[in-house]
Amino acid sequence: MHAETNKPHLSIFLTSASPDITEVTMFYNKLLGLVVEGGASFNLLKKPCVRELCQFLNNNFPMPAKSTLQKRLHQKTADQREFTKEYLTSKADKVALTLDGWSSRDRRKFLGITCHFFSLSSSMVTFILGMEHVYGCQTAVNIKNSLGKSLTCLKVISVQSSCEYLH
Image (cartoon, rainbow, N blue to C red; front, side):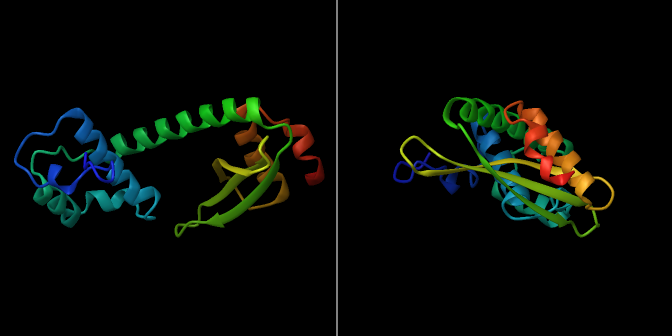
């Protein structure tokens, strides 16, 4: 770790030493960051230029399979969902939901679900509750089903009362 910023320093990559499990985890998280924060496709990680860049930085870092990173992303999502569930149960009395629908380049439809509420100290708190795949057209019924799926997984918010306006 770089002492000044408490972030990993680039020197851990530019070395010939074999990485330890912490460094490999940081490396995998950086690759996940390309996908999640950078909007890159998991398929980008299969491109020779990306593999060559990773090998250039440190040939001893194992390049993960696409499925390995997808499993890590699903686990991080499950962990965040559990944290959110516990947080909302203990801190939120009433919440407001915002929904954002969009389509990917390959025409798959998604629904982003965000929760907002005021904390005891009157500061606004926002959580992303989920990003659900919407099957079929983005009709009110399909959106309701995707919203219900996400809220049911949390087991915090009553799906029936949240979706009455969609009937």
